[in-house]
Length: 345
Ligand code: 8NA
Ligand code: MG
Ligand code: MG
Image 1 (spheres, rainbow, N blue to C red):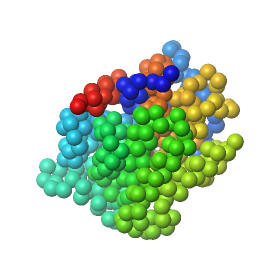
Image 2 (cartoon, rainbow, N blue to C red):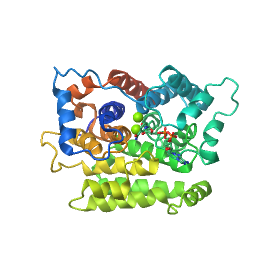
Image 3 (tube, rainbow, N blue to C red):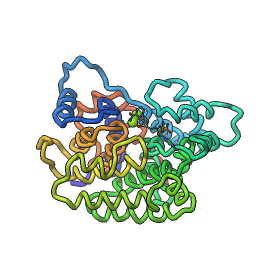
């Protein structure tokens, strides 16, 4: 039975928070044996575990700002969103923000700032950040806007508040589009799902700035499209090792090295996989598999969790996992309110 739309909305934001909280354990690890992942996950089911609640990081902190801003303004308002990012950072600077983005967040706090996109443009000698910080918080755009064009447009603008390199904001649009399609049930046809993403990214990567940025970074002309073609090749294969996934797609803090990877995790885990418990549903498999890749595990699991949560719905997420993570109730509430906004005529 296919989950209802509200269930998918809730699954998307709760899945995103879970990926962040659960994935934090292995952030930056080079080798993550599957045994350790499964141990970490089974500890979530143990009510008596003494470790307390798993904390969320920058991924969730900024996702909440995006959702709050879209809900309050009932549209994309760059000044409001920028102010919320700055305020959130100021209140809780220790949430594991990227080392570059904190300079942007400090500048965004200034009441004298005229152009809220300017601090991001000054990053990395004027080249802008290509980190995955725009993509990790992109899910709410897919819950707030109905048309694919609007999801694209506003997720890119929302990312540009901190990430002015096209690799950064196009990665955010790719993530938002993946959630958008998943909410509509498009993962029922995985090949078509990935083909749709490729054709959207072809349009985005034709852009002059995208071409210049790719060249400056010595990347291929259509970097996201070529990664997505690799995703397609990998899902066609019968068996793929973790090492191959990491070398073909990456597991790093660059959006290019992590957004296609998160999409692969979701597609790969649509079916049961060797080494993952049979009792696991698709969302559990997706999170487990994302963690086993190592690298930027909180962010890859957060992005994969949002796409998978939109596909499987809220009821696919174990209660014990939800209870183990900070701010799940808040994310659920944001999703319900975004659903109400979405349903307005
Ligand atoms: P960001 O904009 O600071 O980018 C992240 C990092 O990417 C930077 O600190 C640089 O090292 C590098 N980078 C980005 N753009 C350029 C460029 N043009 N030239 C050279 N280097 C560049 O922050 P963000 O918001 O994109 O960061 C997102 C990630 O950082 C998330 O995974 C988040 O959870 C966080 N984080 C990751 C780790 C980790 O070990 N993987 C640790 C702490 C925090
Ligand atoms: Mg993080
Ligand atoms: Mg991270």
